[in-house]
Length: 496
Image (cartoon, rainbow, N blue to C red):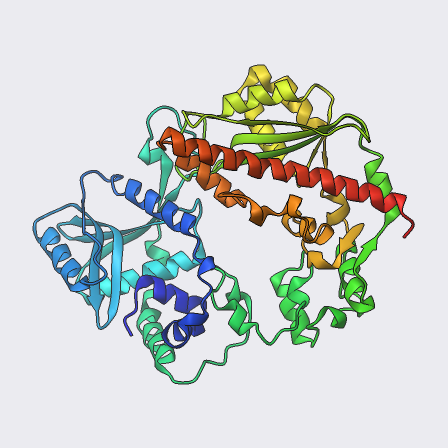
C-alpha cells in the first residue's frame, strides 16, 4: 500500500478506515467529503502560494507521481526558492509539501490549512512529511503551519501577511518524528490483512473528522440509540454504552437523562407514544409574543477569503431574507422578501431593506435566533446610521425554537433534533407545501450559499433562474416557521 499524508492522518484517526478503503470501499458514505470544504481548501492553498514571493508549482498528476518527483528535483536543483506541491516518496510513502522553501543549507516545510486554528491532527501530518523528506536526504530546518487569521479584517487589497498566520511547529513535530516509521509500517500492515480489524466504536468515529464508514461500524446499534439523545456528548454516550446502556429504552435509570428534552425523548420511546407536550409551558412561551408577528430568516454566504472591505475570514455575510407577517391571529398572511444583487458587497442593501420591512418595536420571530441576531448586530456595526433600528429589531426578537429546545413539545419523529429541518417533517409529514425536496435547485442552506456565490459572473438568463430558486427556498423557511407557530397554538387549544 502507498501511504500519502492524508491516508497517514486518516490511519492515525482510525486504522480501520484504511482497511475499509482497501477492502470495502463501496461502503463509504461519500457525503462526508464536503465538496465546498475541498473547494475552500484549494482556494486558500492557491492564495497561500504567493505568501513568500515568487514560486513554481509542481503540476498535479495522479497518474504520474514519479514525474512529479522528478519535476520537484529539477526545481530544487535550479534554485527555485519556493516550490509548491513539492513531491517526495520513500519506500511507498508519498507526500506533497504545500510550500517548500529552499535555502542553501536546507529546506523549510510550510503546511497550509484553511482553518483559523491548529488542530492536533495537523502535527501528525507535518511529522509524516518531515520524516519522508528526511528519508529522501533533505535537511529539514523548520516546519510551520500556515492558517487563516480569524482577526483579519479586510481593508482594500488583500494583505497576505495579515490574512495568514504562520506558526513555527518545529519543536512539537520533532518530538513525534521518531514514531512515524513504526506507525506507517503498522498502518500498512493493518490495511493489508485479510480480516476486518476489531476496533470498537469511539471518539475516532467522529473526531477529528466524521468517518465515511460510520454506518457500517455502527450497524449493530439499535435505532434509535444513546447517540441519538439530544445534546449528548460523545464521551457520555460512549460511557453509557460501556455500561450496557445502548437503546433509548435502556436509558431510563436514575441520572441517565439529564434535561427535559432527553426526558421527553426517552419517554416517547419507553411509553411507545408519538409526542409529549407540556401545554402550560408552550402557552407561557406563546403569551410572550405580540401581534403583528414578523417571521424572519436570513440566507448568507461564508467565504474563507474576505471578499469585501470590513469582512473577515468565514464571516456569515447576509445576502437575502424572507419575511412573513401576520398582523392578527386570523389575518391574511403577508410575505416580503429581498435578495441582493450579486454585484459587490450585499450587506448595505440587505440592511436598508430590512429596516424598511420591520418597524421599530415589532415582535420578530426567528428559528434559532442566535444566528439572525448575530447577523443583525454585525450589520449594525458595519452601518452606524442604521444601527439604532437594526439593534431594536434584534432586541425584540423571540426564538421559535424554544418550545422544542426546552423539551416542551417533542415529537418522536424528531429523533432528538430540534432543527427546523427535523421539526418540520415531524409535525407535518408528507405535506407537499412544506417539502424542501420538491424545490428546484436549492434545497438547503449550503446549497443557498453556493448558489449566491455562483451568481457572480453568471449570465443574466441563468442568474434569473437561480435567483428565483433562492427566493423560493428562503420563503419556505419562514412559511415553515408560520406553520410551526400555528401547530404550537393548536397544542394549547386542544386538551392533551
